[in-house]
Length: 402
Image (tube, rainbow, N blue to C red):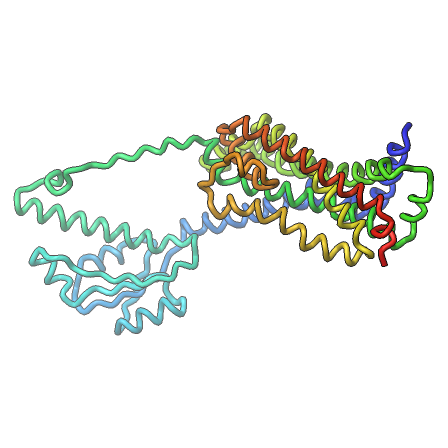
């Protein structure tokens, strides 16, 4: 057994004797995070389900009698509250006493009777994204408008085709895989990157600045173990932790989806079920995992180099906290702009390429040439980070920096 293998085994044993490593590597990604996500999805689903049964209070002001108000009041899910003035309607909506405010123009009925346009003002606060109050009100208004239009056309002996010469028929050709990729692709990549970072940050700090503070780094360097063996042993320790964390994070996402797919399919919304089915793509998960391996090596070597440069674990933590933003921000870009497509330049940017490729792999629209470019470029970054780490270990001014 070579020296770096002996050192690797020693470092891994040291890391996994600490319960924090086990929590970050196994328990957190496999159990806790999926449980939290499941709780969030359940909570959101329960709110959305409650909104379908909820009755909404609607404040209204009108100085005239109108069939529209009567139709609104006939709805089982709308409770119409009459106000004394327009200001009362605005106040009621602003203070959250009612969901929607309606104000009918004083000449509303007169304009309808003379075949003119009648004005309705709708007041709302678009804060509650689950609220169906506005859609319920606008649907009733649309039906009222259709009835009024048909009566006018009938009086003129005209048909709907006369005023609607063009009929637009929209067909959505988006596949279930493409929908799943656009919704979950970048989010999954962000989670995977965060888990790789959490799995590599603590080992990097402990095996670099931590050993410098404990004085074991100087002892290790003074032995007959070469800098190359030390770097390989420590870097593989950090990488092993990162890859294990990424692996368990993937299992943490896949296992609950498989359970839902097998045992709770009948109780899941049809659209959500189709998205989950598209996500359970073993080829996509394997391809993402292959990309994560060199990314883990790159991040492990990069973080280890910074940790070796730091004088204390506290300084290493501060440095790594700022540096990790570099890895997280690229994952957010596809979330902000979902229409982004991967190009050659984007394939050279770590984490950014992972986010877009995860999207494309789930959607089944991946460009394997750009996938290869991303994989090879990440390996190149690995080599650069490993070389920088080697320089750090070979420089006594860095190791014994005070």
